[in-house]
Length: 324
Image (cartoon, rainbow, N blue to C red; front, side):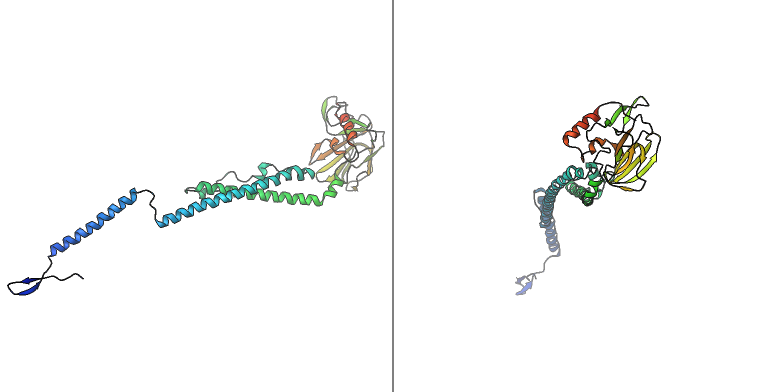
């Protein structure tokens, strides 16, 4: 409340109240308002031109952003450590476990597939820290996919381990004829001159010469898939060993088994003959793995020593004429 001022009137010999002039009051108000505006303008100019001035809220946001970056860096380092461990497991999976169980390796493309095409991280773009967030999200997704693939692979390996005894008994691991002196190996796997067609062609198996009606043995536990007559192979037996293996026994004189019959390794399944496109009594023997022909020389570890294997390997490598 403003103070009331008085003056002494000598004419009336009394004190009279001093009344303020209206124009002067308005001027004071205007000056006060102009002062506030000018002061505010000067403070704004100073704020805009003085660097590194931050409000408490801005400082709090900045601390949160720096903390977020720090947490993302820690997360990336942890993921790098996990990836390093996972890569070691993947290498052992491909080069130890899958080799031991004769399973196909999982390629790097298969382990990292599923991240091409559309941009999965478009919603993370357009921000100040989009790059670190996008890269971290991508790395985490790829890591998750690789862990899933590896987990399924180990499940497959575990199932194979359960069937290991059955696998070892089923793999074609012995010679299909009695060949103690190794002299019955007539022709090996590879390009050979065909004795009837008279031109070089792929010989998909090994020929074992032997007297007619000599015994032919199943080279692993299996089920007889076929026992039939054919044009080129003559009398033919096909055994299904499971685990992707099949063996072919061609040019037989007679069968000792029928389709659907279970046979054991070393069991007599037929007798050597000279049927089909054959020039002399012998057995044409093939090994198939996952529907592809492979060299039978790699499957005699069940009845050959290392020295005997080297002898047979050298004999089978000779490019002589095949018997079929």
